Amino acid sequence: QVQLVESGGGLVQAGGSLRLSCAASGKIFSISRMGWYRQAPGNQRELVAGITNGGSTNYADSAKGRFTISRDNGKNMVYLQMNSLKPEDTAVYYCNADISSGYAPRPYWGQGTQVTVSS
Image (cartoon, rainbow, N blue to C red; front, side, top):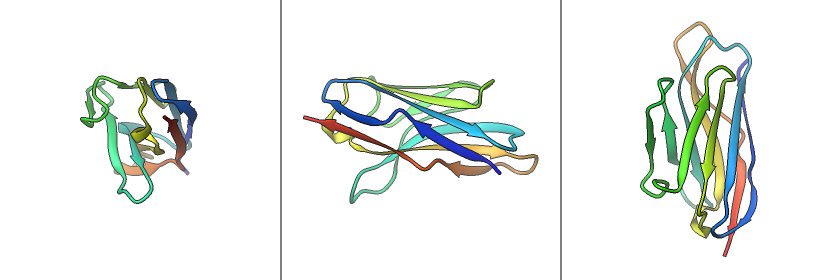
């Protein structure tokens, strides 16, 4: 069984920073793409940032210049450094990863971590 567990969310004032972490565990043969998504109340879940196992990254326009995604392949972890946070960044942030347990990769999701940015 594969699990993704996020940590690092919380309450921060506008302009502040937070670092989210996500650890993948269980029967893992390989991890290809990893990413962070977020969902605010009343909104659809949206991509924030993604990273391949080779280190190529992509960002939502709202995250460019403020957020940085990184990963530690040896530890099966992905991170999201969020700087210059704005109230509109308030959402539940979810970790996502395409993981193979010896078969075709499939997407896994974490349980989510709340990020609240006060004005």
